[in-house]
Image 1: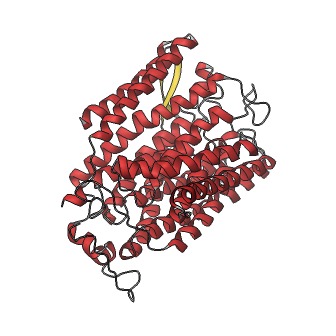
Image 2: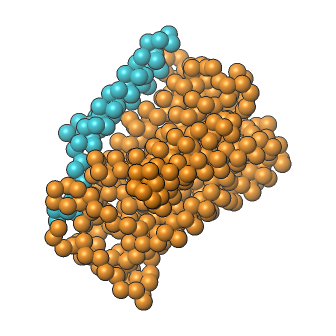
Image 3: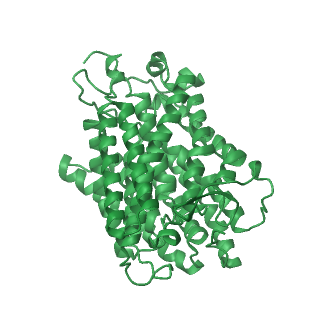
Length: 444
Length: 59
């Protein structure tokens, strides 16, 4: 039987967890605003509608089969015996949440948190596919992500799966640790965003004939920064709920989780601002916003296990990583990612996973806090998680979306890009009084 | 090249999982996990090089 980490969680902790879960939609609202603000004005309405549809499809897919395959530690699962050890590969719950006691049990809270988290993960690729991803295609891609990819990895991490069992099976620290979903939500969503950016290709006019990228600035910085603030609120809920539900944190311990979340985002944003100031003479608003989101994504890994000083260092390194990563993807990899989703979520999330091995304070008995962790096994568990994300989840999500692209082309027609997604797919723009004028279709 | 890159990614992950399942001693296990990650990095480089995403500029 797989151990249940929340078996001893108090009623007060469960109520607090529920309250934290109710904050998570703020993160979704934040990401939707950021994607919209960093995209073009002629696709703004399409971007917001896509976000709403993605949330809806994700919730439904998760309801139909997602939670059945994610499961919860201690629940029924498909288990393989490998070298005498039990490896839990996939939960075997009932579809449509049948036979689940939805009355405040840890499993029911996990179902609720999962239903919102999977929407958050599905929103991430919207940023990388902005201005060219068809509405129907992003809904279909979301169904695949929410119905299979996310639940599979979430089972491995939060459902008592083989990554969570690395501690008990092989003595690797506490097993793969991911408090608020740096790997499970952010990296899975970010790697899907990379797949989508690869499959869609760049926006027309993004690259000149000799391969140099051109700047296509976001249309509304106010939306972007407002989205960042909303995202902070959502992340406070996400990380705190994860700490209680998946790591057995007491209600009082969520204070340090929240402090770490804020510090990570703050230092990441300031680092990005300072770097862009030093490099370009002025701080760059979109890169600073990406740094902020990257800091939040990275904080999700170790926020319940590190000191505030360590959280600040994690954020500082995230700000630098995201800033240079955005340029690297755009210039050297020719990946057109208008929302910076790949850098902020995939790179930030992977770094957040690694930061657990570097900075986490986990006692020998697997409890939160305590002395710095001298167990090299935790390092290895985190590395195995990263290897799984890059070596298994990335090829799988790419392959699934590639097949989807064959059946239902994901990129909008050339005319759709010229007109803008609003007019072409929805028939009306977000800002009807404005005249949209951008001439990137002329020869450079 | 793209397919080969993705196969390398999967192969690297297979090495990592295989090292966990088959090796008992710490040192070879760590070595093989790192080797698996190295194979993944090689696969990732191949996938990246196979994706010159400039469709928009050429159409």
